[in-house]
Image (cartoon, rainbow, N blue to C red):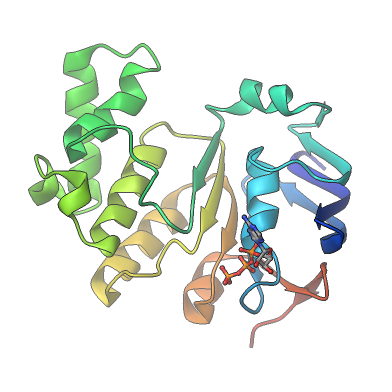
Length: 219
Ligand SMILES: Nc1ncnc2c1ncn2[C@@H]1O[C@H](COP(=O)(O)OP(=O)(O)OP(=O)(O)O)[C@@H](O)[C@H]1O
């Protein structure tokens, strides 16, 4: 089976306490899986380990069947992995919405005119064109979340790691995001407390409890 991600016996220790122990899962190409669990069980920590933002204490990660040995190895996959943090307030690098969305493309070497055109298309797709010239830090939490998602999606990463993509969103925005994510044929790991959202998006659901993952059925 061709996989985007393989996690083998991943553990993570904070101080003298294990937060995660012996975590294993495979994410097939274009598969969408969800991780649920109570507050503080380590869901965000696990996503950060996969994104290369935290180093596992033990265990092994493979990305596209390549073993990640050192944190630097994650650099090779920076453009392939789109990570949406739970709190996006420190996610942005530019002042206005359009600048931030374009920035992702300019760093990929795309010319300014083309980057602008694509960014406008993405804002339209996410129904936030009206935010184009707004200062990001003046936006609501929900608006910031959608802008962050736009900045990630525009780079067309092969793996999406989404931490609570719908918290702070109203029903209309949530449905729009659900529709967009359902249409994206990419591998995804979604952490969410929103069971209805997960049911409509993920083909597998794992519960994180007592430091380990168990596959569950929601209904
Ligand atoms: N920077 C940190 N310093 C100290 N402890 C931390 C830090 N980050 C996370 N933790 C602890 O690690 C544990 C797991 O946190 P994590 O944020 O991964 O949980 P979570 O399952 O994502 O929770 P939530 O559903 O509330 O977002 C918690 O006990 C938390 O207090």
